[in-house]
Length: 152
Image 1 (cartoon, rainbow, N blue to C red):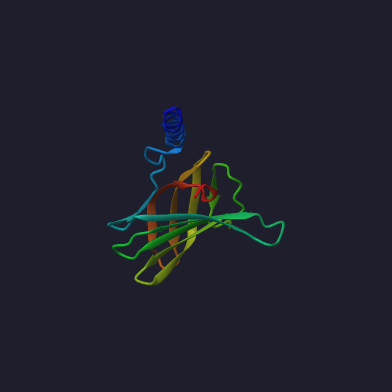
Image 2: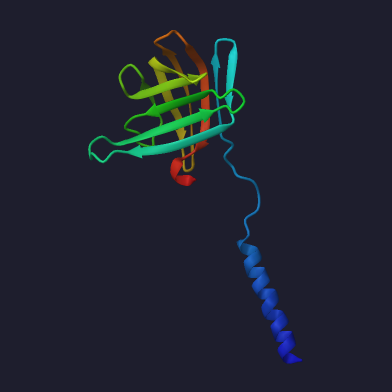
């Protein structure tokens, strides 16, 4: 009888220990990316942040954030060269940033504008962007929020 009570107590304790390891709740990051393109508003439903580190020691790390809208197939990609993990505003004209808009398999590359990082806290990157392409397409009121690439 003592062995069965002891076995039951051990099983209950193990259950409580493993129950304490179970994660509950919802993620705190709600990724989003949007922009106004003429009268159209792109609302990306898939956002992918990533880092690109060159093999050359002095070029630094590049932050790339893609926003893809599945229903239209449209995509916006914004890039910050020499990403330091800190907030800042980066110029496309000066080569500190780059961007493009993909629509109907045509890539509209930015020739002017900015990419800004408002927040680069522990696990979130958020900011805004605006740019104009060589063909005259203007992307305005761009906003994004996503997890840092190394958090995923």
